[in-house]
Image (cartoon, rainbow, N blue to C red; front, side, top):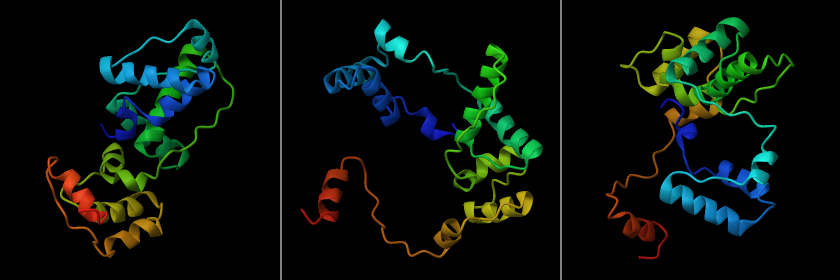
Length: 181
């Protein structure tokens, strides 16, 4: 998807959350994560579920994600990345479902310039023919949000690694890189 970090089934954030709701029991966490890797799911205890009572979970489609990016920019003049857009889209669903009208802070999780094609596509301005650097410049022009210096510097940065290998060759290449070959 346009939000690859959201697509990870076995994430460190999930592992951390399970750690806290198991009473910091590392053995239980290992067992749950093992089940998840093996079966793609696990079932938590009622006591663990109670500790999650303040949580709300949901998902956003690619269309909802793009709408959140475009809508936030058009309404608030603030450009968000696809990961933050998922949070915003799910929050909108939460408000509709719960009628909770309290003010809320949504923490932005990444820079939109890391996802130029997805963000520009959401804004209706993607150009698949442009590389990420040209698209970053177009994003700056379209939104008024300056390209971060770190992104600008990447364009002329020295390419330090040129090794390409197959999965089967990876162990050998890592050992070579570390000077262990």
